[in-house]
Image (cartoon, rainbow, N blue to C red; front, side):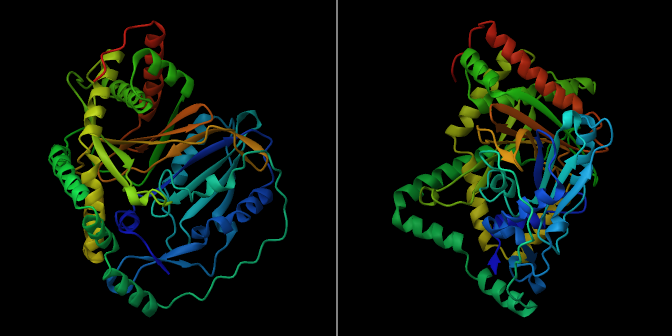
Length: 466
């Protein structure tokens, strides 16, 4: 048995039937499509490298501790690797609609928390793999992502052979899970580790405490509920769309106008939200859209660890600024201030302290947050760097990959960004009923990026560095 971390357990606790907590995406491959049996064999052959994908979650009786991972004695690869096809004409609209439907369904908690769908019938003879995995298993940049393990740096044709026999050890009883979880709940490792770090380096601890205090004060305004048409109750169904850009274009914008890649991405997203709000007839003068930006934070003695420590900063997208150069300058100035103020420290410290919280209270608190429609931010924007070389599955090249992240806690619209082999893609998730105009946002992101590129190529003077 292995106990989930407080952060991983929180992803289970905040999940509801209207707010599913799985992440994933759609990867498109050049044709012709391989046989389904070959894809299933390919996935099965990689599972030894990711044993988590043969494990399921067990919740301890009476909520005495955090959930635990146990091997699933009834694991069946055919349940997890599925096969479907798009209706004619097999275009972007059909693939987006299918993804929205599949992602609207919760994962079965009695089984390992992942699915992979082989999708045939795409235009131009292409095919796709849609992956779906619970956030408690991986985060956006986790090295244990099954799709990342499955892809090859060169084309290798799969071979179909007899299924490999895998036998799980005896599953623990409810009493064993109870005792294990109770013992683990009495050992708040993160807090103990923090105390050890403090004793070893009191000067660094005092400095960190000062940064935490200033960051907490800076984030107080971001913790207040927002009143926005972008927030409110969400239903169980999802819409999903995407946008495309080139990393070469982003580099050209950076050279001509300044800023980091992240600054440019957030500026393009701000332009997309500006178009969305204008299309809804809203006044955007002086308007900002508050976004939560997840970041990975790691202490100096944790750099060799595979897991990610995730916190967040809050930024205000300047949708009220029409001029793209001025909009970029505003984003640059704000992001520089957030980095200098160590604003993500507060979230990291609070995450580590959650190891001290009784698990039942932690679960109840997380569920209350998830069911609330009073959001403290209006959207989330998460940026995941990907490999910059061609990758292959079943001997076919992956030509595009689009990310999916969930919505919830009163946030009706989120954006994920992924880079792969010189391309930059945006995956936009929205509530089905509240965001029927989701493609206004995705199209607006592309238009905003094109506007920035055109301005940069005109050799317009870059704004002064903040």
